[in-house]
Length: 66
Image 1 (cartoon, rainbow, N blue to C red):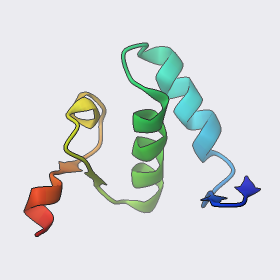
Image 2 (image 1 turned 90 degrees about the vertical axis):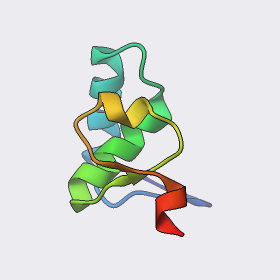
Image 3 (image 1 turned 30 degrees about the vertical axis):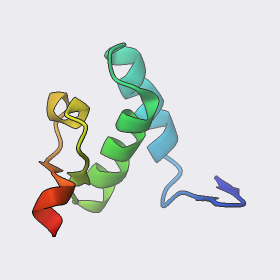
Image 4 (image 1 turned 90 degrees about the horizontal axis):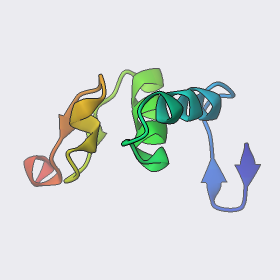
């Protein structure tokens, strides 16, 4: 996917995020997408939002980054 202002590191990220969102209707798409990006890169999600805690990815609070 390549649009002005939007980049993706892999072709499987968006389909995986859609599958995750469909599997858990309470997870917003953006959280599912960020989770898949973090998983693909072996990274944590940096968010004040606790939705990523319900997914199998590490979440780091932005205040912990300061």
